[in-house]
Image (cartoon, rainbow, N blue to C red; front, side, top):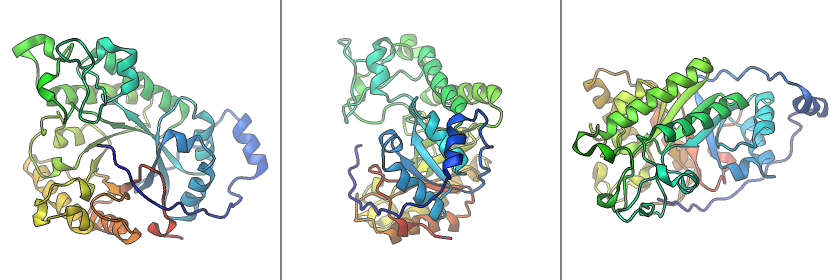
Length: 342
């Protein structure tokens, strides 16, 4: 789903966060300061275009002037200088990497992509291409990109679209590797679980201090199954350092939680989702601890005011979670009044 949000960019006065001498040090020094120690993540999402563009000054000012301590950034190989700047500013950098939904990789490596019966690349309902999650070469490519991000100095690798497709004409999908075994193919959840172990084990072997996380469907907190996309939330929570369920209120169906429009009830939807998730974790005897919800800051289902965004943060805390949250606005138009100031 492509979400278009309308927001207001608040421009903050430029503050002297880093002196000219320190800027020179960032350019010339080979030694990076230690990655900031973060126990309760408070992050916002940033696209690669924003991260590499002129508005990044305002984003960094926003982080330094509020309770925020981290940025989740769409990874790009050109970000070495930015990561150094964030590390020197004491901001925890998280690299968001797309796994199996990736147009560029599918077009560059059609032999790894999901196809239609006629051999054309298969598209989901949003017109996006997918890679076969069980392909070993695909998994190696994703691992290599994560290794590059870790070498660059990111403190956490966050994997998104770590799943099978959920929409479109799924009955037409042909997987070059997963379908090759016919009736003997392993389950979707086994494919995703095996990949998750592969990438976390290899990253942590080379980078012992790196954190690895995954974005998961919020609906997994309501259903004790993999939703047909291969995400077993209780198993994945035991593999990754953190999981980020996308509990955006607007993404729930009418009737969920007895609300005609769940998007109008941010606190209740997030709180009840997490409370239901606890029961699933308890059933499987898995600690409900390393959960960091994605929080909605875009206008879908309702016009999202700063108060509605903060209510989701309150719901997270009221559910007993202490590892933090990350706020998603696809346009990166974040309003300062959403966040507490020191």
